[in-house]
Length: 632
Ligand code: ADP
Ligand code: MG
Image 1 (tube, rainbow, N blue to C red):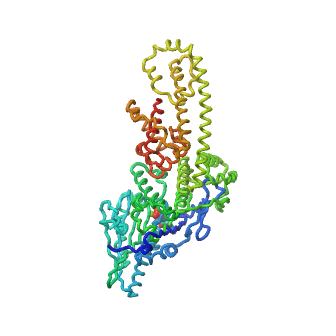
Image 2: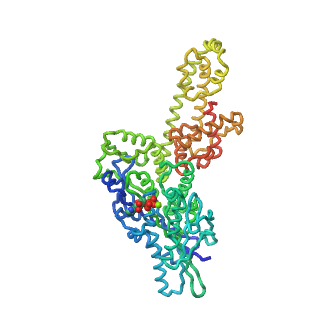
Image 3: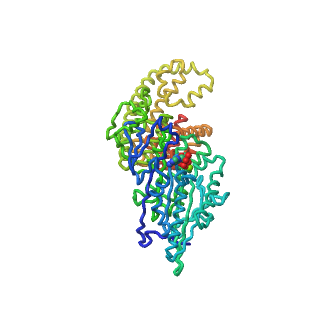
């Protein structure tokens, strides 16, 4: 096997890890009338900078800096010359390189990578350049022979499929002893010229797009990976051999698949895609921050495959494609956050000549608010208030489809996940603690109030209950059973005592018992929260979890409660999640973050996959919630 020459090969143990260069390309408007009507929500500020309107506050813009910014006027040739050509000579020296196009569907990834006959993209230009470089070396008579080959594959639903051999099965990804990544069984077609490449590549790419009946859906959900391999062999002894690999990747669309309404089986696809893209973001992040920690290449097929060509001694470029239209706003925003490691909030309106300036009161955010990022609910409220301002000729963002609160919640979770710095984490944690303290205080007051009411009510009832019970004993048995066994909801337990009339003694009786149960439960919750100190950092809750508690319960009811919990986990808002037992603000946000990445929970047990939810915590959670929903 040919050996890959790593820059660090001479110095064992001091492996150099190179950064991934990040370029952003903004495509032009597709419909000129859209541009006239709405104006862009994102625009360039120079060769490296761009700004986007702040979705939280239209009087601010968010400015981002990248290695390169390609504006809407940029040509295919400019993108190639600036972002791709400089890395290609390395392939002829036994090093690896990768170029990948990232961004939402419709933002220009395929245009950038593949292009058209009239405007060929990176693939055509890069392959031509590789052949030009090889020819130049041959003329130099440097004592080496060069051979070029290609493979073309697709990762779809975390399966590796050979596009040069249609109908092939999922291929394995392996690593040899020199840490080269290999795919046994993958077709490698030898190429003698660019024309030769075209002959194989064109039918294979058609193959890719016609393989599925719903071609757009599939091609925007799969990663298309072209590999150009250059093997350099020494003519004379010692007959050394070096292999350089170039990966040219058209990634799956980064859009939020759930927001675009994908459901059912496609949810699984979007989950898989998100996993690969999410892992890619973690890999790029780990490489670019150079923290020296583990780079999670193995967490997805895409990153595993690119392992020897992304970071390390490889040369990598990510071209993030974005679109100017408002309907892409949220996807553009998350793509930029994926690509950027820093952003700056600038206090100036995004002035558009084609759109009237918003009339919402300009509330300058305090520094503290900016740093803390604001709590979800607060920001939501602010946004909703902004939306209510009917007289505003231009809402803060997204004039076409106003985002619902779940989108905003997800954005907050996303932003937190992607932009989360230690400082922000610390501030958020402090906020969570302060909030929990406030809640505990409120609960204590409420508890006292309810105890007083219950005592008063108890006394009042002592004399009346006997007669009332006698009066009601001729009620059908079922009714009695319902009011004593079937558990009234929390709210009933708290509110009904003040509303019951004399003619409902059995309910009264039930209610008389309820407040103390309710209070006990509240007390327990308060104790747990106090005991834990903070939601995630504290020890596991005291293990009062009786392992057999489920066996005493009716299995149909048990199933029903589990379904209800699952439903809340999958579609509940932040507030709904927080209404679950043992779920506070932090865990609720983590649950939302998990949903963001993996799609729906298939069973409540999936909760254990969330970092802070240990097996023990999960048992407490499930018990508390099932008992609470059954009213035990
Ligand atoms: P994606 O692959 O990200 O889904 P496409 O590359 O298919 O997006 O682009 C969507 C549409 O926009 C296509 O019609 C494409 O030709 C056009 N387009 C994308 N980028 C540009 C550009 N820079 N200049 C002109 N047209 C573009
Ligand atoms: Mg595409």
